Length: 391
Image 1 (tube, rainbow, N blue to C red):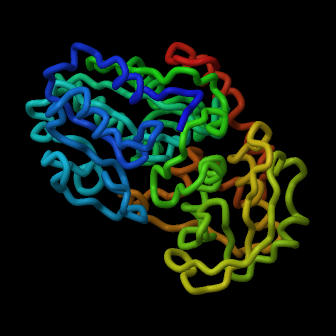
Image 2 (tube, rainbow, N blue to C red; image 1 turned 120 degrees about the vertical axis):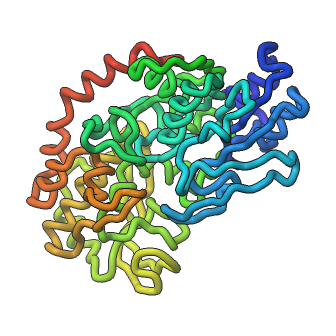
C-alpha cells in the first residue's frame, strides 16, 4: 500500500535516530498509529529498537481504542506481545505520574489527531510534555498530517474555559499537526523539555484524502474521514440535548432528535451555511446513548467539497435553524462532562460562553463568527513559528 505522504513513524523506522539506540522508551499510541501496510507502531519501533519499549501509554478510549463513550475509563494492563505495562492516561489519572516515567529516557508519541481542540489526544500530549519536563524525559513526536488541513475556525479558548477538552489557547479547529502543537505549547509555556518532532514528509497541508495514507479510526466514534471533517462543528452537539449520532453507524455525520422536522429546519437555515456539503434528511434509531431505542428525525451531512465546507459555521447554523424552526426542541446538556462538574459542557466545547447565550437567543452563525475574527487573525501569527509544513 503506497502513499504520497510518509509519516513520522515510517521516517523513524527508515532512519532510526542513533540517540535513541539503547534508550529506554515509552510509547503513547493507539491502534490508529500504523505504518503504510497497517503494521502497528509498537511493532515497527521494536524492529529498529529491539527490547527498547519499556512502557506503553493509552489516551482516551484506551490503548486498544475499545472504550466507546466519554468518561469510560481504561484500566492499566500488560501488553500481550511486549510484556510491558500499559498505563491508562484517561481516568482517575490523566497525566503520567513520576512512577510511570521512572527509568524512561524518552517518550515517543504517535497519535492520530483530527485537527480539533476538544479531541483529547491533544490534552494528553500537553500533560505528557509537562510531566516529562519535570521528570527529565525527552519527548519525540512522530508526526502525522492534520486530516482536515490548515483551516482555523471558531473561538480561541480563553483561560477561564480551560479543561480536559481545552488544554491551551487555540481555536476549535486549529489547522496544526500534533508535532506543531507540541512546538507551540513548549514555546508558549516555556517548558524545559527536550522535544524532537520527526516530521512527516510530502504533506503540503491538504485534506487527508490527498495523502495516500490508510484511514484507521483513531477512536470508536471516528470511523471515517468524513467523520473527522464534520467533527469540529458536530462535537458541539455533545454539549446539547440533540443526538450527535452516537449509537448510529455514522456518528457526528448523523444527528437529530425525536420530533425534529427536517424540512422545517432546512427552511430556517441561513444562506451559505452548508457550502461544500449536502444535508440529507433521514430518520435513525440510536442503539445506545441519547434517545436509545427512539426514532429520531434528523440529517446526515455529506461533505461534497472539503475545501469549501466549514464545520463550525455549519453546526452553529444548524443549531440556530432548529431553534428558529422548532423552539425548545434542544437545550443545553447539563454537567458532568469530561470530569467537569459545574461548568456548562457547551461553553467548554465551543470556548465562548457568551456566544452560547447569543446562540440560544437567536444569533446567526455569521454574527457569532464575527466575534472571533480578530482572535483568529492573531492565532495565525502566533502559530507561524511552530509550522513545519506549508501553511
